[in-house]
Image (cartoon, rainbow, N blue to C red):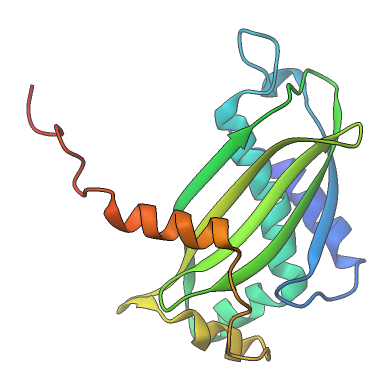
Length: 180
């Protein structure tokens, strides 16, 4: 089940924090609960993605995303993600999450998030997110303008640009996705 109570708590805590710019870093703290673990007694990989929502949604509130989306009747969709796991997170481990915008291209916003345990990076995710409307995907520059930010993206890190290029080569629909 989706952790709505945890999300409500994070949103309430973020209300007390000052606004952020799009490339600012939102820091939040979370505890790996017993219902977050897998049979190997560590944070489940699927639940990791859900926990990243608990940082990304308050980050969005702090940059004014919720107001801009509501005012323009836009939505947001995750259009891709790449996760790197490096350290185990076990039940009751306390972690720090860092969420920040990296920049955008003509179709997508790119957000980096990471979980830190005892001062060490445990995992990291790159999120490609799309602004949507009934007419389809909205150019991120329109959203950035609605946020009152400069409409030119900061240069994306080389590793993000390489990921974007690799994603452009990925076949869709997936090869071998036909009937068995």
